[in-house]
Image (cartoon, rainbow, N blue to C red; front, side):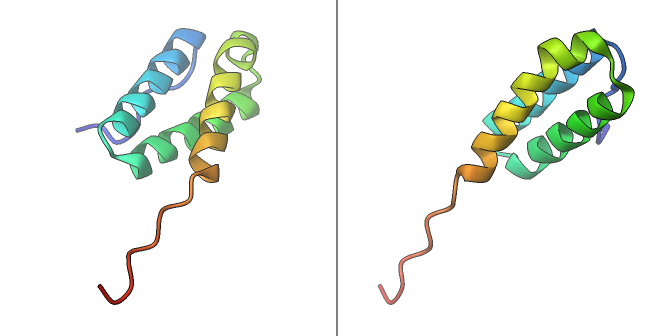
Length: 78
């Protein structure tokens, strides 16, 4: 299984976003977060205009949601 999807054009970046969201939906939060982080870094470093306009906002919104969710600590002494 391929660890990271391809990045590049807006279509490839949108597909990578979909792969990350599928991983998150399946419960593989760490993999989805890693893909989103790499995708964000790729888009910012290349400056691909359509990805900056269409994909990056979704990536940033999802990353913000993932980082604001704090896990519930396990119950102590039950």
